[in-house]
Length: 136
Image 1 (spheres, helix red, strand yellow):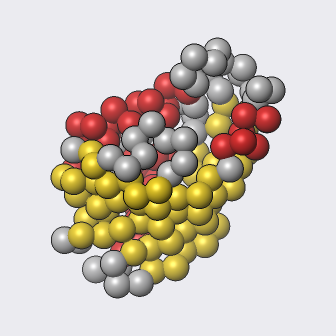
Image 2 (cartoon, rainbow, N blue to C red):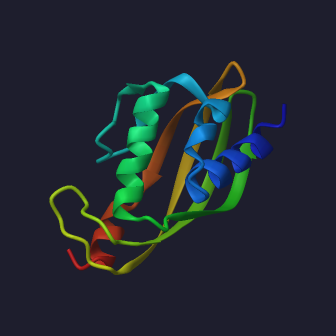
């Protein structure tokens, strides 16, 4: 299995194209968020349905959210990617109202694999810059 190609397809089909019906194709039934500061699901293990709720949470705030993978480093049980996130804030972020402003931010995510599926992630993402771009 080519984990990098699998992860790139996951990012395109799930995050960029929002094909929720394909979550089970890519995501392990127990998806653990190991580190993702300020993520409401930090430290939790998500079922497929909970993973879809998390997707909706993100897409409600940024319906046109898009990830461009800028590099990928695969190993036996992980694939690390750097990425550029873009999107327009058209929905609330928690209690904060939509600004209709466009964001652009960089991050790195290490995706974990179990039994050939993506079973979690460790992520560093500069949300402070995003909030600044939104005017908060």
